[in-house]
Length: 465
Ligand code: NAD
Image (cartoon, rainbow, N blue to C red; front, side, top):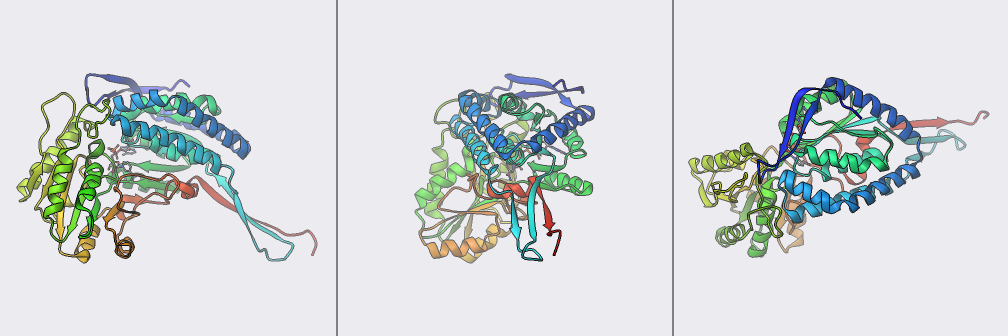
């Protein structure tokens, strides 16, 4: 499709080699958005009329194509968003799994029957697609997030219009090219652009799924509500790991170090706060050692765990957060500065000794920085963990199942993981947070159907009697 656009050029550059320009395209303006959504709406009517078996087969074929292009997509992901090779490769595999999973879900029952007003009556409820699903996504999971939204939307009969993050434009356009042979024309479209393109989309689509920051997520939810269309927003996190006194400190430290600093901490599920119950000494020592042992460097190299930040501005935010924490009376345990090398790299940074209401203990930075907080007992740990506006994920380290279950009941997050990193998502289970971290129905698993379908309740009585 030829997309008309106004003269605003969008560039995407590699964060490890900022002179490496991956793509320069024009942003889709309101007219281009309008045209794309019109074509998507036409495509949706044919797609809804296709059988579930056809939709399932198309998603299965898309999965095969993606699997065949795994090495290429992994390389592009490393280059465009600086994701370390191992994680990038795992993300592409996950994306293939997501397509296969929703190819199967397309075949699930599409409704329910209920006892009617007469024994011979039929009272049933059927799922119907919404029409055109608008997706607005961030750059940090540039293939998995678009697909964990697009796959269920397509499986249940919708067309999809994706506005990716400008920093992941090349990946989104390549994804569209790869999926195109498996899908009818215009059913899955990508509109390059920033906020203006996203806003224009919001005015025209039939439902909206957003992932990104809290500020933008709330704006998207308000705009969708004003139009009366359903929406969901998955937003930031300030995730805590609670280390109980019986936990293996070294093991917990290794897991938490990876969850805090892997991919330079640029995950909504990254650990930002480690809360130690009891004597923090042994765990602090183990965590500093684990963080210092993480390989920082070129994301294209096998074994790299911490690559660059996405932009210079993102890196400056981390440096400033570390400086502010020290000014607030905190102690820098490791890191705190940007290494002298090309690319937006930052040393993994750990701070302790700040108050629980200091900014670093309250606001997401979205980088390789975490704070250690001490709690006198379990009660205090829960209070600290819950004492932020976010509520995405928490984790607990203990060998005591009773305590783990007790904490799981009291932690105010959508996901709770025991002896596991806060990062990591299982696409077959519902995903989402509490408080400022999420708005609207859950994503992934069987829960995804709630945003992308509506129900029709049908009552059929016999003509006589
Ligand atoms: P962002 O909010 O800046 O941008 C997200 C998307 O929204 C981008 O595509 C952007 O172009 C678009 N956008 C920006 N302003 C807009 C507007 N006014 N109207 C419509 N669209 C607009 O976020 P980001 O920097 O790309 O990603 C980082 C954030 O995403 C972090 O806060 C992180 O925690 C969050 N995140 C959350 C999850 C989750 O599932 N909860 C997953 C990944 C990332």
